[in-house]
Figure: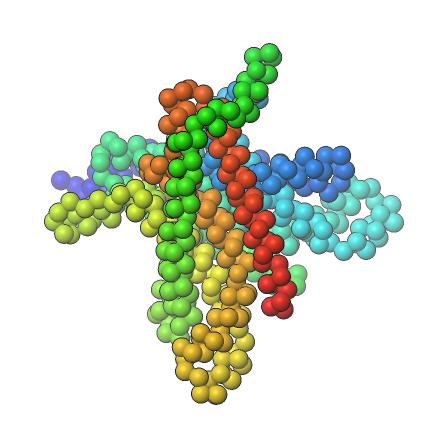
Length: 220
Length: 235
């Protein structure tokens, strides 16, 4: 008889791999959605007077609700009210995006406000349009101060993505729980799954740390 | 269109949420119960790990760092499930009798472990922000090591780490919602039971989201109010 982890995890590595791919998809889509939505919310708060308060309320709501509550809320309430999302996968991505958008909006705002007014005024005086100022003057400088928290938020999205298994999105966690239910070998399966997550997140956080240090060396 | 409108109205008709307060309120209290138990575990473990990280012994320092990183880099959900299933089986095999964790115990251990990693960082930063000169001065005046810690280091360190520790606690409260996944009867668990029984998920989930939002937003705002003067005084 093989060792339990060979019998369960290694024989089903294709299933686990499929799960990991879904995890990566959910994380990537959720994160990109969060960046876009967060940036829009940040611009609304900073530059569009009439929409400032609605945007603020949304940001605070996204930030102050636990991700799990948000996930269930998006999954059960949105389809009835908004007619979207139509699948569990979309609901999972939407919940992750909405959750992180609140945090990222605050990060973007802090980064943009950190740019000295003189730079912006100088660029405007040179005849640059507001859009060009944003793209050429504000964002490149703000990026250095925002990068650490953006990368940190990416790690948060990976960690939160384990929860989409609750609404039956077949990610790595979902496959692990399914295999556990079939084989009842929680020690082997859950430990291997935990190891996969820990390895991925630790490696990414090391890379991010290296990149942050390099940015700091170069620009401070 | 009309049907959609009707559903939107239903989604924010919180009367149903209020109707079931007799089951939902104890659920919310359970959230607070788990929260307070977990804060104890997390702060305790965090203090121990921070002490290890600041020790002069290289091996101990590595153990502290490794522990904090491990806790921080594991998704909370998998910590929760792992603690719920794996250690009881290992203990059963080792002790040769049936051991099982109650959901509450597993939840408190798992969330405690997960957030102790963040507390470790906060405590370490707070303690190392105290200038070495203060410690040396206290030692030169004849204070013992523990007295120096108690009278000189901690009062200053607490001031530095309080704002961060408050944030940590707010996110800890958010994680307590996860415990419903291993059948600890918290608010969200009760909500899912009621919504299965009545098949009226919309107002119940909206109500739960609203309640959590109000509590966490209120708590976070209070924490901010409370820690701003501290932050300024410590400068």
